Length: 187
Image 1 (cartoon, rainbow, N blue to C red):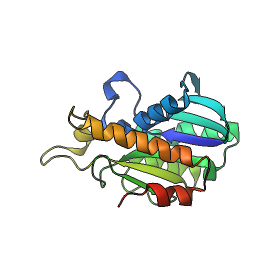
Image 2: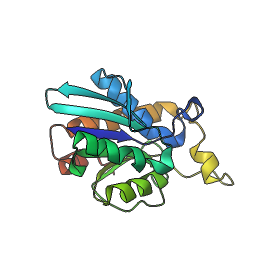
Image 3: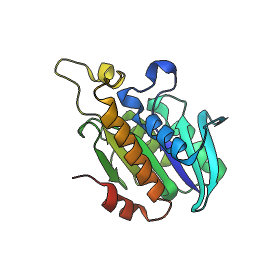
Image 4: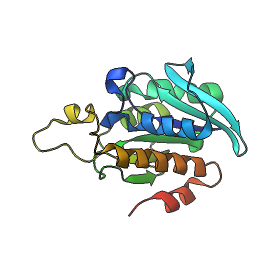
């Protein structure tokens, strides 16, 4: 089974914020596959489906970003999912808004959700789809920025990024992640 994990914060006040691009991408993937995340276990919303390429699970940790690993690890253990079969989708301030960067390993790079995953998984080696949100405007604090919503002008480019990230995840059902990276990493 392949597990696709979108990082974000639960609650209406965090919907469509910069920090919730993982949730937005999971929503795009759920729409693409006709799935609804209507099940809960281990403090996460999730859905499973049997696709022609194999069984898939979509997951949104409901633990808040900084302790995402507390939901992901028990889910992986319960469903016997190997770390090679997960993809984590999250925001990255070091990428321009709407740009994607796929990696198979790396440090947390200051991202507390990834830091929590590394701690709970015991490895930095897991597949990632990073969605660019750019740096905060001059004078704006990082926490205020990541918890702010995209403007109406920014949303079309972000919707396209969520859709493309969802396509990359779907491609992982057919090809090794290295091939997904070659196809979807943007210059």
